[in-house]
Length: 41
Image 1 (cartoon, rainbow, N blue to C red):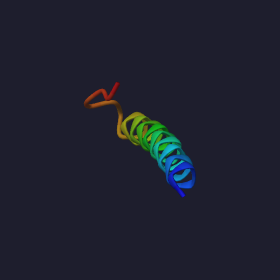
Image 2: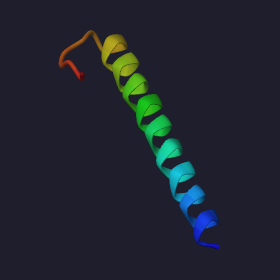
Image 3: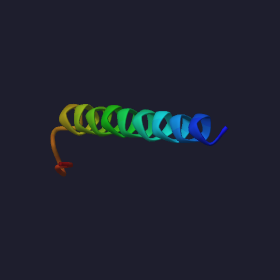
Image 4: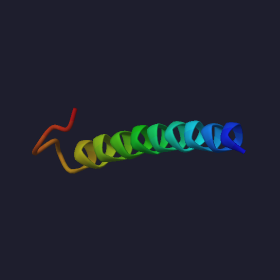
């Protein structure tokens, strides 16, 4: 059971990193379309 929990924690952290990356890309695209009034890095 402990191993399974560890794997699901790893999976969650990978998913959250992936979602953050997608989120950052989406923000960059929105900023680009808005004329780049402010930059997000």
